[in-house]
Amino acid sequence: MNADEMNADEMNAEAVLAVLNEAADAVVDAFADQRDWGKSGLRHDQYVPDLVADEAVLGVLGATDIAVLSEESGLGPGTGLVAVVDPVDGSTNASLPLPWFATSLCVVDEDGPWVAVVHDHPSNRRYTAVRGRGATLDGAALAAPTAVEFSEAVVAVNGVPPAQAGWWQFRTMGSCALELCAVADGRFAGFVDFAGSLHVWDYLGALLVCREVGVVVADAEDRELAVIDQHAQRSPVAAPPALIPHLLSVRRGSDTNC
Image 1: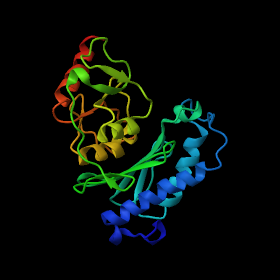
Image 2 (image 1 turned 30 degrees about the horizontal axis):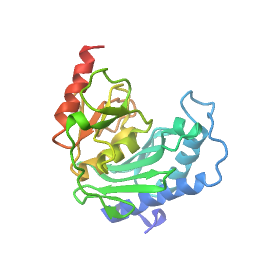
Image 3 (image 1 turned 45 degrees about the vertical axis):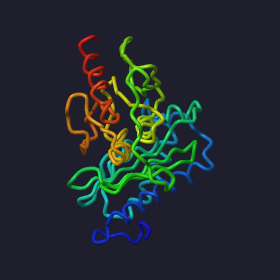
Image 4 (image 1 turned 90 degrees about the horizontal axis):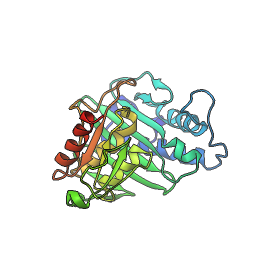
C-alpha cells in the first residue's frame, strides 16, 4: 500500500510503516542529484537540503490523513495521527560535508510514539520501529545493547559536558537522531544532551528505536518527551537501564556547575 491508497480506516502499523518508508525513499531520491548543500538564505540555521527533503516528505504524507509536524514547515492539517518529521537532522554536517545526517520520521497516536523510520543518508542504513514490536536495522531485528561499565563508556553528547564526568570518552557528532540510534545498536554506550535546546523532531523517531530495544530515554528534567509542540525544547538522556542513573546524575549535576 502506498500513500495514495491510505485512508483513516487503513492506518494500521504496517500501512504507516510503509508510508514512512516511502517518504524516506522520496528524500533519498531527491538527494540523488542534489548539488547545493548550502544555506537556504531564509533562516540562519536552514539549508537548501532541508527544504528539498521537507518537500519530498510532504509530497508523500500529504496524500494521507496524517498531520505533519516538521521542523521546516510547522504543523499541518490532519486527523488524529501526527508525523513528527526532521527532514534533515544534521544538515550542518551535510553542508560541510561530514557523513553524519539523517531523515527522521515518527508517527504519534494517542498513546505516544507509534511507528518510526530513521534513515542514515551517508551510510544508506535505515532504522525502523513499531511500538511493542521491536526495532530493526536494514530489516534485521536489533537486540538489546550490552551495557558497559560507566568508567569504560563512550558517550555521545550534545552541548558541552563537565570536565570530569566519570565516563571514558565522549563524542559530539551533530545529529541527535543518529546518536540515539547508535545507542540502540550498541555503538555508543549512551547519549546526553547538555544544551537543553533539542526539539521533538530531533529525537522522537530514534527515541522509539531506543525504547524498542530496551534503552531508557528520559528528559533530564522529567518532562514529557513526546510533545506535539514545535516550540518545546527538551534534554533527552539515553542509555541501557544499568547506565542511565549515572548519565542522569552527570546531566543534572552539570546544571549546578554552570
